[in-house]
Length: 136
Image (cartoon, rainbow, N blue to C red; front, side, top):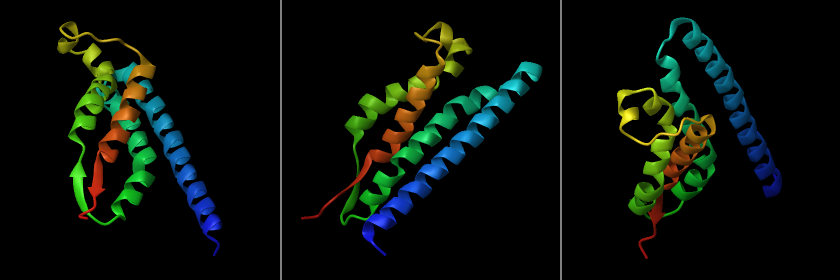
């Protein structure tokens, strides 16, 4: 089979999986919001940061697989993780922090876009912080 055809099929399957998970996640988010509106269950707040982190993982997955196929030993980029991922994790959990007791002590901006972007960035960087370094 032609290499370009394999890549095209792989990308189409990959985009379909991300699209399917995004649709299912959005439907589950709507269900949890309805559940929260009627019962005030805290399960809704814990799903909010997990969903974008999962999407970030899925976006980083092809790069991680390509990196895993290389020869060498695994390394972790601590600088990228600490400087970028920790603030992104804080952004991902702003919705929970805002409604907690800690929210009075920390600067928190209550924004749906902020926790989505922070979660996607954190999920992506958590996976891409791992890399292989050649022994040569």
